[in-house]
Image (cartoon, rainbow, N blue to C red):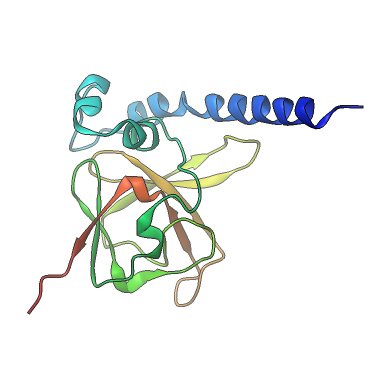
Amino acid sequence: MLSRRAFASLTAGIASSLATMAAPRAVAARSAGAFEITKTDEEWRKLLTREQFYVLRQHGTERPGSSPLDKTYAPGTYHCAACDLPLFASDTKYDSGTGWPSFWKPLENAVGSTTDNSLFMTRTEIHCRRCGGHLGHVFPDGPPPTGHRYCMNGVSLKFVPKPSA
């Protein structure tokens, strides 16, 4: 029988291994298509924080509930944190209860998608169509009118408030 400490260590090790397995997808996704903005990893590291680089360039995931953007509902637009492309309008944002900023629709021609087969499941990954930065995933359990839940990493986004009239 495992002690609590041994069980916790085993669980943490498995979670860490699974997260590490997902990182090589970044290279495959970048080589799969050409983006308008391309930079070397060294150039991206100079522009992004460590966490932004991990999520946007290495396809990581931030902890749920860790982004202040999850509870931001002011009028404005959510941009790509890497290249500043407008991605989502605030009027499509809703509280999904997941701990990540969620939207029911992206702006026209703002995002692209790829199939993500990591973590023993198939999901649809969403990336910035201009720089290829990993934003999150889309799921078919969102509200009307689309029925989609674009579950985004807050660290991948930059909120730009609507100017006062």
